[in-house]
Structure formats: C-alpha cells, structure tokens
Image (cartoon, rainbow, N blue to C red; front, side, top):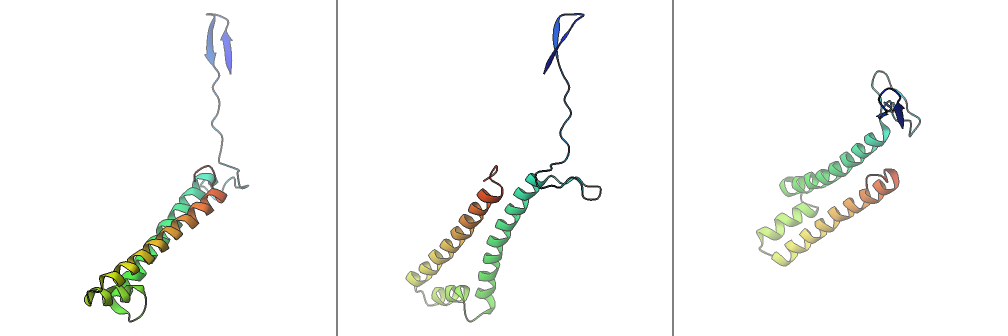
Length: 117
C-alpha cells in the first residue's frame, strides 16, 4: 500500500512484515526451529525420489556382485555369455522400473505438493 508523504508530496511504500512460519499444515513452531511445511514437503518428496532410485541401483549392483537370482545376476550372466538381446531386455526392464518410480513420485508430488510438481 502506498501512503502519501504530506511534507513532500511523494508516495512512500508501506513497510510490510514478512509472514511468520508457515501454518499450511497447522505447524507454527517445533522447538526453536520454525518449520516451513511447503518447503519441507518438497524437500522430503525429492529425497524419497532420489532414495528410491539410488536404492534400486544399489540393489541391482549388489545382485551383480553377490547373488544368483535377480535382475543384476541376470545382467552378469547374459553379458558373460554374450547374449546381448537378453542383456538389453534386462536393461529395458530396469529403465521401465526407473521411469515408473519417477512417475509415481511425480504423481504423489502433484497431489501432496501441487505448487512444486
């Protein structure tokens, strides 16, 4: 809002206070740290997405090294036998799984944190 300074005839902006901690989810303060729920929800959602993708990569890597079952062991088996068609089929399955994880978290983000996704 603008107020007119009567002495000089100049419009001066009114200083507005910044809003306090977000009360979007009914949280005002937890201890000494102000919780800003909208920002926090986006960060948690991103962390879950990255964790799920890296978890899948770690599981496949562990299967390559020390398992006799699973997609990782199939990758190692097919690459050692030079069966490239089967090898690339497993790669496509893993890619579809990664895309499915991303789409799942995208849809969750659209519902939970719609201002971000």
